Length: 290
Image (cartoon, rainbow, N blue to C red):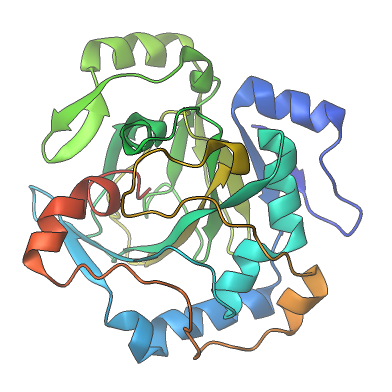
């Protein structure tokens, strides 16, 4: 595992960047303080404005996960997390240049019945949205503890070096061909990424990843924050935004942020309309939600 423990002096040096390029991901323990994570949990559980955008996504076997998605950061605690220096600076070092927020979401796997997600690459479909280069990645924050039992992330180490694989629909989700995937699983290490609340993993958009159903009696909330290089602004207009600069905030500003009520400017994705749900499931419900 390519993992580190966060402290005030932590930064991505050449050695750590080389490991990211080799593994395709970096896991940072204790990145967010318990106070920050607890505010996020309270917001998810109590903010009516946010909860009205919650969409329940069933799989073919009747397991259900939920999601709330948005395109802009805003000034609430989740937006401050996406804009804070310790996150954005890490992402920019790993991707090699200025980045912007592509979109964010909360993914909720309910106890005993939370749906899993098949093997996939995020760039397997971001490619189709006019993003010409795989200069993108996902910063996944463990809001709840993530374990094998409740469906933590699993990554194929180094799979980003294979490039983008063709994805086809399989049981309502998009995945690469089973034959190629099975060959890769034979030669690449499988990293099962169990995380404590407040840990985070950043992975390249071509890393193959999946998560199993939640068979435990504990909820699993993840917070994937997706970034794109400023130089890679999509050529197609679609449901995620083109480049706009991130207004970075200090780590101290994040820690002192208590805003869990004002959702101004977040540009939530409204999945309540059945037609919209059907047209957007590829990106929001059945793909890349981890």
